[in-house]
Figure 1 (cartoon, helix red, strand yellow):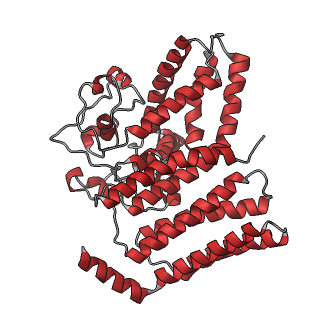
Figure 2: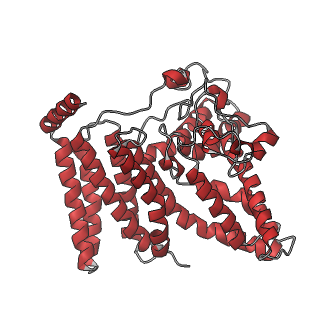
Length: 424
């Protein structure tokens, strides 16, 4: 089994991050505000974590799907027949609707899907803001396609078509599309799905087609007198990918602690997100942001100086380099450096996130980063790895340290803050 993902990285990473940074750059030069640096780099960091884990999880998913198709399929369909493709597209979209709806109805699945909905800016970056563990909760719904005789190749074509469509509809463009809304899940209808407005919650679950929502009573148009406010009712507390991915799990744990029976424990895990155990105080269980009207809700956006933004962008470059090396050599690395690099990747993502949160980072955070870099560097030197790897690791470690020294310079950052405020 090939666990080195060089080809996957070469073909997938530009497709994932290229359009995001192109559109963000255009947004920046036009002085628009739909792509913020904190939000954009958080989306990209979450996407990288999802991408890396998906490469690994998909090996098992593909194996299960192929086994079911080869051994247990009910029908022997002609995989070259256009009607088979039509069936696959329709069936995939139908199953996607229910998979998506289950992710809103079942607490444990919502813990996974919530990551996608925590974005408070609506742009292309939201389409790749996907939980680390999405593949673990998505695959089961689509196994019926294998039983019905749809091959893996046809299944993947149908799924890729849905992925591309999903990328395209995460946009504020196309304000009104009443004709397309009758059949397709349009940007307008998907904006409704991402709203925290009461009227819009749990609406428009469709993938490419919106007909399933019309059939099953979850259809809702975007209303001029009720502008969409993006995000979730309980605003997520951080830009850290680790915190965002684990946030609702803490809510489930809180429900379990308040449960007084096995039934309530089960409901805490698998019940709808709105369900609460009897001992829970409904008025205080969730944060105050739940009670804020959508028209008065403001996206989380702590002020950051220009120098701090540059350090975060530099750190993100480190994140990409570590990620690419890790995934391209995943199967070849011994266990120890594999663990070190994996921890380093997630730690750097978290590091950037808490800086974006506006926290003053202490020396402990950077020491942990340096320990991880030095540990990998020691392995590279003692195992006589190529000089480019040793040199690049040392450069990244130095870059991280310089970033911290710049960020921790209180006087220069204070002056930078005052200068930026005066310029705004």
